[in-house]
Length: 116
Image (tube, rainbow, N blue to C red; front, side, top):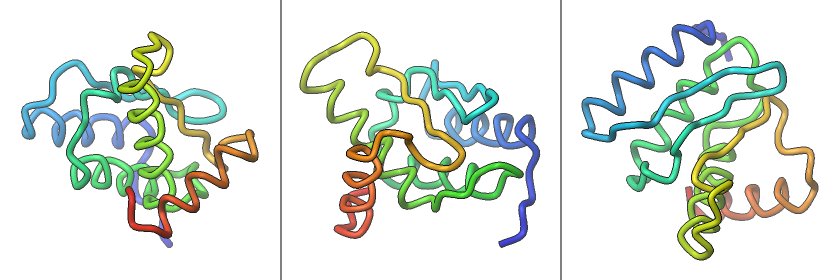
């Protein structure tokens, strides 16, 4: 798959998508190993989450599929809703997948089950 967007372009496009959908306060910040999605728990719509992940999939760095990233993001959202743990209101998606084996496995299972 051809990579179309730089990190800055992806963040700007995601910002437009989120604002058009009426979701405020969510932003993408790229780092050395992945992207930090500030206030990711505010994105509750599955299609919007998947659209943002499709943009990420088309950046120069991500090796994960949009479906797998969306499933991992959903896991973060579910954990936040269950616990209201302040660290879970935002999520980090690594370029090559979460380093924690259990998280990678859960995201793959959720993606295959269509829970993205």
